[in-house]
Every structure is written in structure tokens, then in C-alpha cells.
Length: 187
Image (cartoon, rainbow, N blue to C red):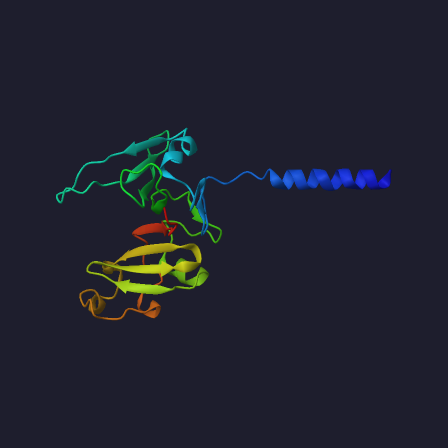
């Protein structure tokens, strides 16, 4: 009798742990809320059934179709910008997701409202790229790229693209301009 009660308790504990609800704003290496690195474009309407998807496929000046899909919540706030790996292919996996809403956070509380200090204190920086008007801080641990405007850097570092920028050169209070999660799943 004791063993059957004990088995029943373990079964209940197991089932309650399996039914853990996914946080729709949690960011990790393989997922952003309900999106995963295995999500295909065709699945987006089912995932964001309560939200609004804007699939705008205009052609750019080089006659190449753009393929970004914007996600808005039911109040009209932009949540995400999703870029599929292949343009205009509903079977394509998602290549990158740009995060616009501050409710999306990593387990270490990193969001678009974070600063460079938050990135540097919580994650190992893989690479820093020096571009024309921005720097891109890459964190492989969560497949993330953070763009920081060069206006946040000291004046003597803003205009030299050949300069190797290190983490110690970036002020702690430098704000994140763009926050991307990048996935490499092949179609």
C-alpha cells in the first residue's frame, strides 16, 4: 500500500513538472518564447494566433524580394521582426529574430533595455565587430548579436573602422540599439 502511494506521488510530481508552461517572452539559445530554432515560416500563424503577422514582400531596388515578417501584439506594439533563411518559402526555417519588445528577456534578465555592462557581466563576449556607424557584440552562448551605436563610444574611437575595439573600450552605460538572435538550422 505504501509503495502504491509513493508511486502515485512520484507520478503526480512528474506530470506537474512536464506541464510547465513556456514563458512567451523567455529568450534562450534555441528559443524565443514559443519560437524555436526549428520553427518554420508556415508555423508562425499558429504560434502567433493572438497576435498580428505582417508579411510584407516588396521588392527592393535590386529586384530581390524582402522576406521579413513583423509580429505585433493585439495592442499594436511591435514584438519581433523575423527573417527566414529563404525568401518567400513557407517551409524555410527562421534565420534571425530582431527583438523590439522589452518584455523579451534572457534567463539573466538581458533585454533591449540593457546596457553593455549587462552583456559583459553576464555573458562571455565572443566577438566585437567595428562597422561604419555601429559595433556588433556577439555572444555565442545565446546565439545573440547586439548592435551599439558608435555615438556611445569615446570620441576618438568613433570614426576609425580599422581600430580593433575591445570590451574595455566600450562604456558600461552604452545602450543596446538592436538585439538579434541568430539560428543556423539548414533547410
